[in-house]
Image 1 (spheres, rainbow, N blue to C red):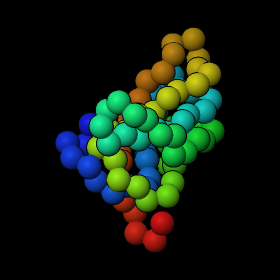
Image 2 (cartoon, rainbow, N blue to C red; image 1 turned 30 degrees about the vertical axis):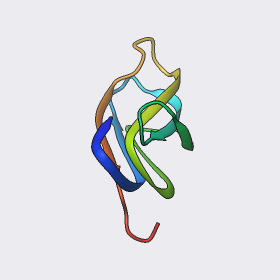
Image 3 (cartoon, one colour; image 1 turned 180 degrees about the vertical axis):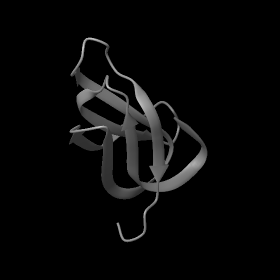
Length: 86
């Protein structure tokens, strides 16, 4: 996901369809070429909130691991946020 410009963020919210992974890794970039993993999490339902240290990013990508259905992966909604107090 390209945010259009570098922005501070510290939270990723994902709403899943039935086809979802067992776990995810969150990676960020400021140039689209060099990526840094900032979080990893298990997926346990139809919504996943992943918090990480506040960092500037222009691009955010979610690396999905281990599909829990035969249909692969399906994201309903994805939000990149900067939440206060993190």
